[in-house]
Length: 367
Ligand code: FAD
Ligand code: UDP
Image 1 (cartoon, rainbow, N blue to C red):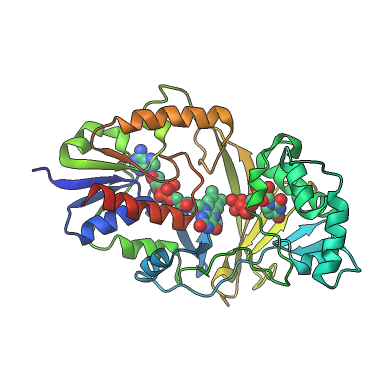
Image 2: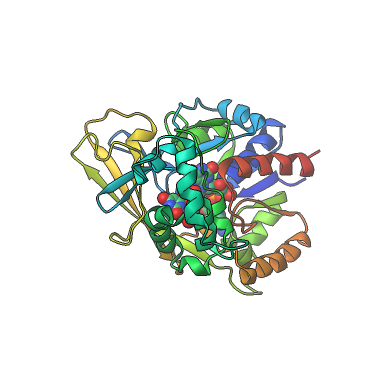
């Protein structure tokens, strides 16, 4: 009998969910993480009494009732509804694209019919199926909105011309013919009151956790103490990059504390033009309706990934998808190691999907 049923590599939402379910079932579990904190990329750090989202703004939203009930069993969620605004030069518009946006873009728009008249007229320039992101965007909302609210943001985000990007990236942005600034279509939405770190702390209550601990420093030891390894780190790193390196987009964050109790009046302001290099400014207190004297803001700059940086967005072009498939084949043949989460599956995962996938994985491997 080994000391642990599971050693879970990574204390992000995949690892924490798997570990929690296993512990609840009476299994012996050790969670290790190479960072000096738990919670992976949803980690929040308290600064001036404000929970700062250290790896980018995270808004929990889901359509899965079981996942919503699960997360609410650890912590209460508030009623935060994501409604970013977009700034271009000296103009400001509501996001996602909805009647508030259209009425401000075109001064003769009052009804959905008025908005459709403009959009349908503008989208005539696209003939047939959209071939790239630019064509997809114009056929969704027309050229005026594409140029003001999509082109610059997307080019900054991906460092590529919109004509060279796949159409699917833009498909998840809602277009609504009602006056509704809610960014997400899901039934449930909110922010854990007290921050995500507290939420993950509750999930890991009672479980052995070792921080500043890299799995690759002693693979044989971890294999010797565990029946199974749950691995949530990068899949190519696990195989020592033997087939090649998977590509990622990264981000740089610049955080400031301001002696001002309300800097921008909204948690998320998107900067959609090329006049500034950042894509968003986050004012963290507004996620939790904070009334602290100071405020903390973060500028988010898209960046090419370089060694030592964090991996944020997968690049799902043909080359990377193929390479990821080859690594998945290797992973399938790896005995007693289970791969899960955004890094190990090389997949863009929302938080609810990653939790759902960990719950399903646990039911599959431990029945
Ligand atoms: P992670 O959180 O990355 O956890 C993996 C952990 O493994 C890390 O802590 C890492 O340190 C550890 N690890 C890796 N290698 C090793 C090793 N060798 N040894 C030990 N430990 C190791 N989703 C939403 O639903 N809503 C949002 O608003 C949202 N916003 C986002 C904004 C940004 C900028 C990004 C990039 C993502 C966003 N997401 C959002 C997605 C969300 O971040 C992910 O779904 C979630 O964090 C994935 O959890 P994970 O456990 O798979 O990975
Ligand atoms: N997008 C845009 N303008 C905006 C916000 C988003 O054009 O103001 C586009 C952009 O191409 C981006 C995609 O929509 O890559 C998805 O953005 P979202 O904010 O939904 O995703 P996230 O960056 O949070 O993963």
